[in-house]
Image (spheres, one colour):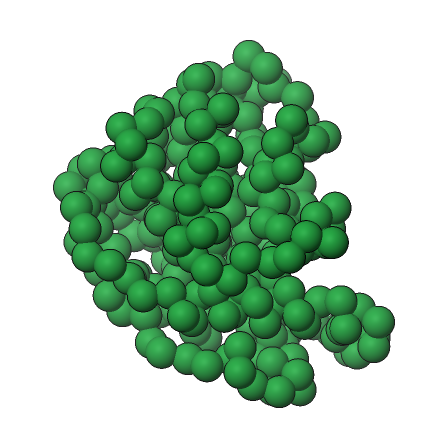
Length: 253
């Protein structure tokens, strides 16, 4: 189910929800990464997934590879959804985008932001320089397979057509995140919850702990089992954590 904005997608209608959970996909990801979340959450939570340009139904739009431009445009579009409290969740690259959007909302004194969730992304002061967006297609594919290993025979990157469609988008997203320079600024006035995976090859809990420096309202770090895409393996565990931090009652049948 779409919204009136090209920037957001809903997969369940919840007009009476008390809180909106705005979800930001990883590099190369799309809004459908969060398609399965609504059925696992109580009806009081409205899941709204961000749809970046250059993918799925926005495939024919140019990708945005500048963080300031992307965060600014998402924050502008989000203004129409701030009629009720919101929480922001971002995974991997999405965590960096969500953080920059959160900063803009705070600068504008816009909306009631309850919490920022950052998943599988090093704190801004801990990001290690990389140049993946400059690498060959084969090198890029090898890196993606390390992050998201797949059983033999189900690797979409072996399909020439799918590969030719996916890699320009992935490369653009890596360019966005690798060329973004963190700017010092006022810490957030709402809490940050960080989630790391014990087997993540590119983001250790130690590199997530300094997210604490980006807020004056409280910080917590949780380490869950799994690899970089731990949230796909056991979404119920992650969503239970989100509901607990947001103090949203779990509705049982």
